[in-house]
Structure formats: C-alpha cells, structure tokens
Length: 222
Ligand code: B12
Image: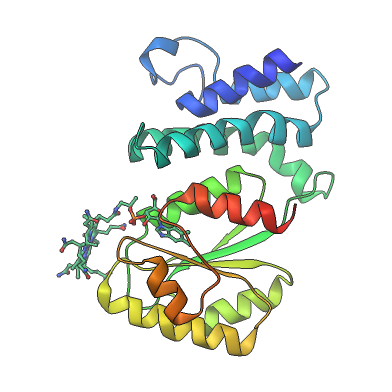
C-alpha cells in the first residue's frame, strides 16, 4: 500500500489529475490521482490514511517548492486540482464522520477587495492538508466572518487583502473579531501585508505564502 500512497502523492505534487489529463507531459497516459485514489480505496486503504499518507504529503511538497520559488501559480493550481479530484472519492467518508478533519479554517478576502487568486491558493493548500475550509469569498464584511466563526466553534480564520486601501478594512475586521470572538486565531496575508502590519493591528499570524498558514494551523492542533 505504501507504494500506492507514494504514487498518489507524486500525482498531487506534479499535478497529474487523471489518466486523460495531458499534464504533466512526462506522465501522459498514466493513471492520475483520480484513478489511484479509487484503487487505494478498493484495495482496502482507509480514507484517513489516503488523506494523510498520500494527498497531504503531495500538497506539502508542492507548498514548500512554491515557497522556494521552484514552482509557480499554475503548477500549484494543477496540484490543487489533482488533490480535489482525489478528495471527491473521500468526501463521503468525511461527511459521514468516518474520518476526522484537523479543524475548521474560515477564509475570505476583506470588504472592498475582489482579489481572490491568492486567497484560493491558501484555501486549497489548507484543505489539502486535512482541514475543513469554509471559503466566504471576496468582499467579506466583519459581520459575515463573526457569524461563520460562531457556527464553527474552535475554528481559525484567515483574512486576505491585496490593496493598500483594503488593508484598512483588514485592520477594522481584526478589531471587530477580537471584540466579538477574542479566542479565535486570526491569520492574515496578501501582497501588501507585512508582519509589521500584523503586529500593529493585533492579528495572530502573518505568512507571505500558503505553506506558512498550513504550518501555523497544524501546530495549533499538534
Ligand atoms: C489579478 C489582479 C487583479 C484582478 C483580480 C482577479 C481575481 N480574481 O483575483 C482584477 C483585474 C479583478 C483586479 C482588479 C483591481 N486591481 Co488588481 N491586481 C491583480 C494582480 C495583477 C495579481 C494579484 C494576484 O492574484 N497575485 C497572485 C497571488 C497568488 O498572489 P497574492 O494574492 O499576493 O497571494 C499570495 C500571498 O500574498 C499569500 N496570501 C494571500 N492571501 C492570504 C491570506 C492569508 C491568511 C495568508 C496566510 C496568505 C495569503 O498567499 C498567496 C500565494 O502565495 C496584482 C499585481 C500583482 N502582481 O500582485 C494587481 C494589484 C493587486 N491590483 C491593483 C489594483 C489597483 C486593482 C484595482 C483597484 C484596479 C482598478 N483601478 O480597477 C482593482 C480593484 C478591484 C477590487 N475592488 O478589488 C494594484 C494594487 C495597488 C495597491 N497597492 O493597492 C496591484 C498591485 C496592481 C498594481 N501594481 O497597481 N486586479
């Protein structure tokens, strides 16, 4: 089974979705994350093991490569697509409660801001690492974050901002969240955001990339 897990991890790392997918060219015609995940389930592997010993490993590898600028956004999107295709086979087990997630991560781009590419990457990487992700989309007001946090006790929340103007919205939202749900950990990111800014506005964690968010969240539940 370990060999099959390694093959699935490899498919996720290199963005091999399924047999008919032409990407990456050197894996053309081979089974992808889709077929191999089904094979692993049919062979008796537990959905939890497929998630943690195969899919998460592949996503971690691509996350580290992305942080080190060894791969770029399109490769990460292919990996996320391979991972989410495999996840379709596992979803019924998560829904039935047979497999536990690490926790819930709520994410959104702050009010006034419509940029969502970076936010989606963070969302996919966190989900690929075994978290349930609630994506509130873009242009999200504090109230919507607060309502969602209250529906998911013990969750963490991520805020994304890409405009210098919406960094002000981020500051306001952090203030509102700290007042309404002080125990909730707040992660922030987006191109103009810095750790200096995080300290100033009182958020809990800043990362310039999705992998940092994954590592912070994982150590919360370690
Ligand atoms: C694509 C884009 C758009 C697209 C957005 C499409 C979409 N669906 O997202 C469109 C065309 C809609 C757009 C619109 C605008 N844009 Co624009 N846009 C960009 C552009 C080119 C790329 C942004 C991007 O996706 N980067 C790639 C992603 C992967 O990077 P990222 O978002 O930074 O995310 C990474 C990290 O920051 C981190 N991260 C992100 N979020 C989070 C959250 C957490 C919790 C964590 C831990 C990490 C994290 O992880 C990600 C992966 O590493 C940038 C320029 C640039 N090169 O950055 C301008 C840019 C951001 N836009 C800009 C502007 C001005 C605008 C507009 C105001 C233009 C206009 N006059 O209408 C509007 C604003 C609309 C609005 N209200 O939001 C300016 C902002 C200037 C500023 N300092 O404020 C930029 C910098 C361009 C420029 N040089 O002038 N834009």
